[in-house]
Image (cartoon, rainbow, N blue to C red; front, side, top):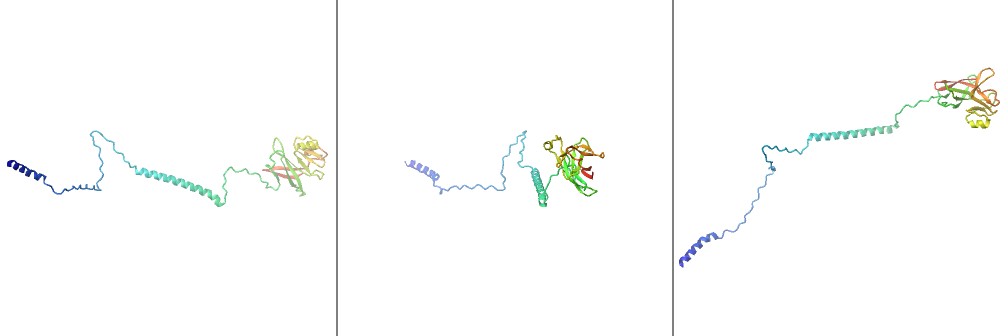
Length: 253
């Protein structure tokens, strides 16, 4: 058996070097990957180019800067215009208040009424515009310089305007004449069916009709014929005429 054992020993010697204990186990250290350089640009995959196929170009996301600047300038101009208009309106509204002048609306010029500036004028046509309108006045006799109470009446007429002026002193009496427009009172008090205003004398109850003309003993005509009562004659007449827009009293009968 010595031959067999020698073969076993030879085999053992060949196997031992393969299983010889190795040096202490070392843990492999994983090396850190080198940091990417900050200057390296981020790569993006490119689309493959295919012959014969044209790919659409990628639109730029950035807007035209000139158009944006123009729009901003337009908005600023509009805002400035509104502010300027508001300032002008506020300034215009403050000027009348600061100067104490009341703002008024301009309209058509008013119609100027006749002003009685003539010393001989007794009334204006505006005062006697309506038929049967009347006005009292004082007439100074140019001969005697005596002041006489008088009245002028606008008589209705189909043609030119007609006015009757007379002294309110009853002829040959101390009573003063009255102008009555109340037709009911004339009918009840004087029993006369008047259809228009009348001139009366309360002292003797005489009624004078402004639309009727009487003839005096000397042949002259005078307005205010007696239609009731015992009066002597019609009221003393005062001559008037129109000058511009006023009535002028010239002389007394």
